[in-house]
Image (cartoon, rainbow, N blue to C red):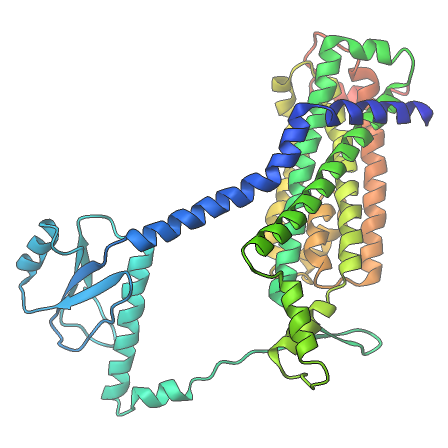
Length: 435
């Protein structure tokens, strides 16, 4: 254990002391908010500087009046189609909308002309506008006042309450649960790929430089492999903690500088101002109940477990691949069996888990060790029965031990092999070797 600890220290300190680590760790929390800020600023500038776009409309039905917006204005006239096209070609109109005589039950033939290919927002705006007008006209012809229909329409908001076996009621929100599962699953997916590749690259570099031949003279190959995996895991965990602290601090500073408040502060102030008042039916009360229904401790603990468990399991496989080859290009043939389960988990997170966390497919994705680190984090925020969570964690531990044993067999022989390009058959022989 002492030798493994020495390798962990070496791997950790060697990477943490690099300038690249400091730059990536400190700049990443700044780069993404800065990019988003630039995009928002550009979008606002374009909106402010954008001239009003006038669209000529010829309505042969004499029924439809399209409402203008901040970006688009509609001009109705008795011009001919050819004259309207000339207005567009001369730059006097941004576009031209032709509404021929149509059957309101099956409107066909409506056409938009423009010098530029129309963007999706414009087409959607025109379609929604026309759809609303056609529906109103059909209601009117049926003897129904459209205003009555609009007055009758009512928005319905359903409160979601989860009941446990003891009958305890917990307010939940599907959007919040979706966001938590989405972010947690994506973080684990990225972490496994980024730091798993670092393990593989590190093993290949040491093997190519023959440093490993000196190291294995004083410690076992398995100890070297485990030390490298755990050392890089500590680097990743350190980086993640720094990012969380920096993002939290920067958010507080920026919001304070702009004279805004954090959502938590606003909620607390609103709650304190309403102290003593009954507000079970108020919107604020629902928000506070929903926030209190999120088991933050369970989510954080599960994230740390699956974050490390998934990395350690796949890290062992990446280390085994790195030990078997002499160059990164030779590793590509062995990457497919390792990356397929990760891609399946990633796609399953969006297709199955986040849409229906209690489906049979979601259950198996969150139980199988190769997919559970990503899939289970998509389910945890929705609430997972304790027995399923325990089963998933237990199988992930067994999966880590199995992949470590498997990678150790490959690592023990492959780390000292040079000049040969192994195949799957070669790896299988190494695994069956007893020494």
